[in-house]
Image (cartoon, rainbow, N blue to C red; front, side, top):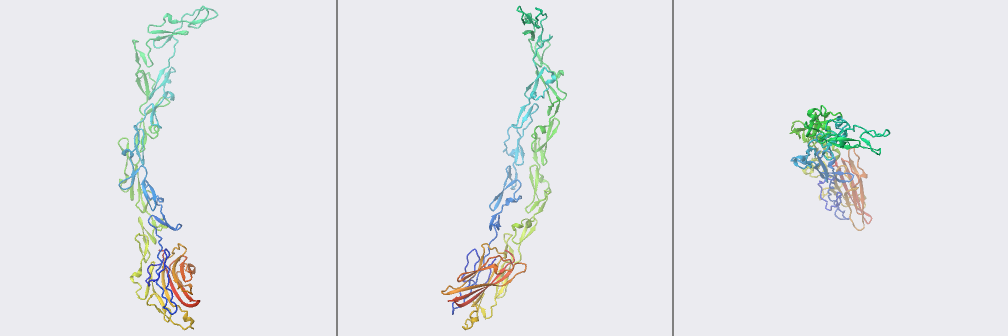
Amino acid sequence: MPSQHVPIPEDPEPSSSPPTPPVRKPERPPPPDRTPYRPPYHKPPKPIPISCPDGFKYSEGHRTCIDINECYDEDTCDSNQDCINTHGSYHCNCKRGFTKDITGACVDVNECQVGTHDCSEGQRCDNTIGSFYCPRTAGCGTGYTLNHANNICEDDDECALGTHNCKDLGSQFQCKNTQGSYRCERIPRLYYTTSTTFTFPTFRPYPNNVLISQKKKCLPGYTMNIKGDCEDIDECKNNPCSQLERCENLNGRYQCISRLQCKLGFELNSAGTECVDIDECARGTHQCSSTQICKNGFGYHVCTCPPGHKLNANNHCEDINECEYYRGRACSNNAECINTIGSFECRCNDGLKQVGRDICDDIDECEMSGLCQQRCVNLWGSYRCSCDRGYSLNSDNRTCSDIDECEKFKDQQLCIATCQNTPGSYVCSCPRGYRLGSDGRTCQDIDECLDNVCGRPDATCLNTRGNYKCFTIQCPPNYIRDPEHKSRCKRAKHTCDHRDISCIEMPHQYSYHFMTFISKLPILQGHIDFFQMRGPVWPGSAAEFTMRIVNVNCPESIERAHEGFFRMNTLKHKAILALIRSIEGPQEIELQLELKLYYNHIFNSKMVAKIFLIVSEYPF
């Protein structure tokens, strides 16, 4: 890129148009018999900025700075945070169920403690990572089953499910469902044999059957009337029942019903005056199995299982596996359910400790020294090791390894020059002739010419990117230094014999111009105008321009500059030199631009501009 430090006389007529570097123009040559033409000093082109602000990177395809999406890197935010990309930056928000603590880390919100849960009465609030859970606080007990859809205990119909034991009492008993249990009731029926008790109805057939006809007989309990038809005998007219019984006539029979009828589960006392409860459990007349518990009730008894047991198909009580029966709701999500005989216990998960009977609290593993190599982040029921900036977590999830940023981000050009990895970070360094910029990544050229490094009064110091060059102008034969313009040589003799053509065609003056470019300077608009020569605009005058490469000095490993790298645009009285291809440095190129002036088609004068281009080794 052209340097901004060329200690040569100032051009009295500068001509430039941003953003291309300013072009160089000499003064107009004098007409015949006037003062010789003196080229002006030309400032070098200004550098073209290619660095981007923080949060942006340069895109060759768009040829502009574009936003860096920091959220593509999974390590940008913590695992409990969501990464939000913004224009030129980003920020980390806590996920739902988490909040920031005083250190800025996202930690779990215990909804059960702060009261932000929506658990209803009869439910327990159990905190989970980022949320909470509402299990039922107690089991339903024997005879009920939990409806998981509405969290309500519903009665088990043992009669419909076939889990009762009424069939063991005989076919005269039937099952009747009750809330949480059942009972066995006797099926009412008629008895046709004489009974000596007053508990059940008794049928007594008429003792004497009358034979009315040899051809026709009536069934027992019927008699033949005068019409020859069988009609019912009303046995109750003869009072066949005792005083404690009443007689009920039926078709073809009768029954004696005790006036003091006891219900199932009761019996008459010894006096026969009242019904008293039968304690089947005490008498041993119950039908409970050896694993059941008999409980007597008023008029009934029930066979129940011990707490934590249920009746199986063989009428035996077996242990209830509460862990399976309640489908993971016996314990909170923070504990493991362990079944025991007749009960169960909740064992806190790894990373949790028992606090009280039903509460599991987090263990802060980070209080243990040496658990993580660098940083420890406590989590609910666990922990996570993390690393300082510039390090990555190893596969053992405990130790950290340094990140080689220079290798990992080599495509992002962390440093404009040399990147050197350091533990947890990196440093940028610059080659000789540069100093590191305040941003820690760019390199700034050192202007050695400010220290008068050339030392000779007739030397011209040209600062280049990363270096400098001292030039001493040697005028051609028959030319002397122009005392008014340090970078020009003028003719020592100003008159010529009109027959001396070679004397007439000698240039009136030589001007020397020094310019610098960075290596591989981007040609953003297809060309960069870097030098301009202008002739006089007089009536009858005309200008003729020619450009050639005098010399190129460069290493053999790079492409040598040639005329294909340059273009000369000429107008009637002006020529502009432009760079149309990037030149790789280091190279030193000498160009010569010649102006011939004609007046009314007759040669008038000539000027030569020698242009020295210094291309630096680095592209910055």
